[in-house]
Length: 124
Image (cartoon, rainbow, N blue to C red; front, side):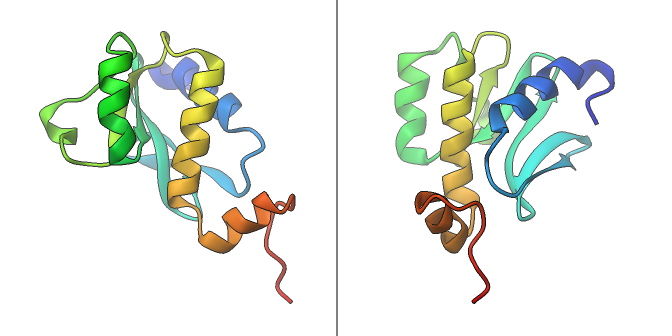
């Protein structure tokens, strides 16, 4: 899924998401994406831009604090997603943003299991 013009951007997403439980590669709007249990986390918008789920309460702060990295278009205004320039975001910040997106989208039991130090909730 990392072939083509989106390859490097998707590879950065994949690396940053390593270790997050039940993250799977998928597509969204015809571009490579990451999801947790079929719920959207992030996708490559174009070779320079990724879309990340982002709590609305953090979005404004990110837009103000790092406009060279984060931005939005009218399409994303009021939506809990933010655009990021993939080649400008530091690996640790990308990892943090993906962890935050994962927390937003992962089922509560899966997040609780991760907090307890397990990858998946037990079925018992």
